Image (cartoon, rainbow, N blue to C red; front, side, top):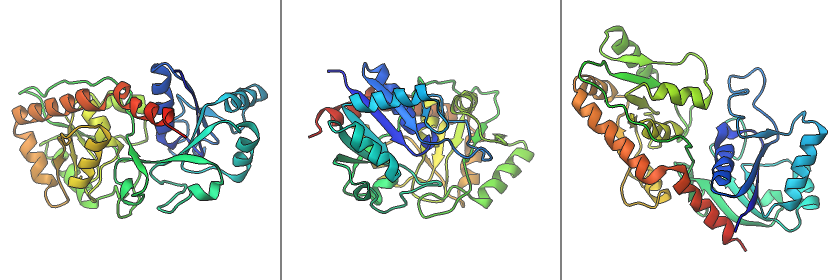
Length: 324
């Protein structure tokens, strides 16, 4: 049975709802992703994550009519992070027959920040979801679901004559117990190794669109996620897809959450590092093209077997089909 699913979010949420909406369409369902606003125009994220998103702010009457009609006919309305009271009232008036799903994502410049926001919406929510990375530690009663990467898995093993190419692309420098992505020591290590020509560091100076960043990632052998917490982020999933050695500090529970979302007992082949070990880890890889290629192949195999979007999207379809 084909479903009609409307995704609503306050911002593009770095493309996560839009990717899910597109994956649903590719699976034969009708889905529209609507963000109330883009990121601020004077900010680095503006315009970077709207490929599969309909922006409601400043939209013309034809777009608003499109969204109204879709909301009126939707079987499922999937709310991401939060909505203002005016949008909730609009849903109450237009979508009395729809079933509601609520999902928590990573906080950036918007809530929720580790507190229950769903009850305040006052909607008949049938299922509560949370991104299955570090976030389930804060929402233990929510069902963990995966973030999707739509790209096809790719593998270009490092050759013996190639320097180790390392992509480091932090989206921000915020701090926090599970959201910290900044390490002064890591940046010093990367600059030093690059200057000494031990490794080739690819370090974008400005935020890139997801498609451009993935194209750049496919030219590299290593992707570095944050090494400050026991978590992993979207960088790690994209690194697996690009056939990179993925370095992070994910602990057993974070890796188990990825395996749980993928419905596999196999943990992801992440390479563990923290501030004290990252230099040795990178030097060891730089000295061993063979080991680098082996780890790249493990990343590719894991993504291809367990994390393809056409496989993971079925988790969401099953959730939608079993709503009461």
